[in-house]
Length: 129
Image (cartoon, rainbow, N blue to C red; front, side):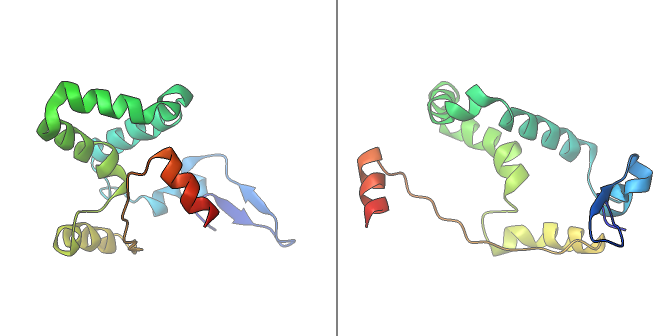
């Protein structure tokens, strides 16, 4: 039985109706996430579901950066969105999280991410190439 249900004999997926029956407790064993991490996840993923925030994210982030200043803005981002989706800034920073997750039987997939801030014109030009 998987975390979100089970596969029937004909190959279809059948969801479970309760957390205990679904195996979610096996996917997220007690102690694998702190209350703060769970709350952060609820907050961040809830904000990601609000259409206008997603649609205007660039403008909102620029406004927050101006209001809070770079240092406080950076700290806020690391405590929320960055902390939710990024394990760390470098190889050394991610090791404690990887060790902790491994202790609960959770593996890691590492993806090197680099972003570049392009103008609309530059992005369109690169799409056409």
